[in-house]
Image (cartoon, protein in one colour):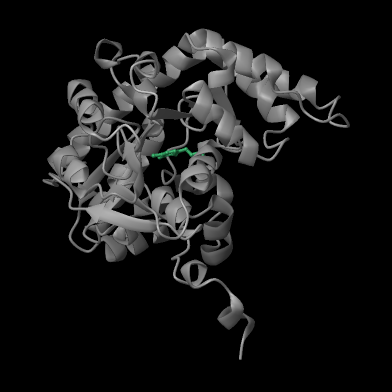
Length: 362
Ligand SMILES: *Cc1c(COP(=O)(O)O)cnc(C)c1O
């Protein structure tokens, strides 16, 4: 008998999350020097972090003997989103708030709906507390909202939607999301994960936080890991009705976000110049990578975030050949897409390195 036999069966059934390979790990494995490795595997910001945020984090180091106070960041997020402060829940990364939502609404005997090829944290959050996962088939690699609505059962408590989606980059137009909210039962929580909405062209963005007053079952999740360049600090947040936010706060660790993350996020939110530069670099890099993929004759899914998902046939094999050349992208066989790879938009020289290595690998 092993200890594993004593573990909860639904925990034993979980397949572990596979992160992008760290640069240091590839360096250990291949002997390629760290500074010659290009990592385009985790949708990180190639510009690094906002200089203003960096200053604020450095300043916050004196003060770490004190427990954190979330007040200022909550106030700022609430103000920017036009919500009350009791509608904002901070997380240690937005993964944390996804977990909080699951813990409030799911348990054995309850289910959550998510789409095939959608973000891996939804199954993790659902299964880790014994919820049942209902996966609906994708439509053109993206969310099929009609199928998702039809899949809702009496025991369904959450629908997970990433828009744009990771790892496919698909985007459901906002009017369709709104129609979905009109159609789903009011006692089912709809989680709209907007990790990449900062990369949408400004004219295409819609303020969904303003929808919460019409749909108290809507929870909007955002992260500061992507365009804000704070992935390593771990900070994200949820916007919800006051009632749902209160429930999430009851299961939240009291000090889930650390002092440095709070200070960095507060400063980053105000750095419009950095945000604009990040958006612009992504726009140009996207054009570069898409043009390169077209030149190689490769199929790709129309991107809406800071990454492109493209078809190579043997995803694992091509990935190995890229790694040997010091280029890290993301194989997505675990998402049911073994013929595809996902590449994050980098700075121009990184994109060039990637495209050259890819041509070699093919
Ligand atoms: C990257 C990502 C997140 C953010 O995760 P953090 O925990 O905030 O770093 C959330 N949702 C999706 C779909 C993502 O791709």
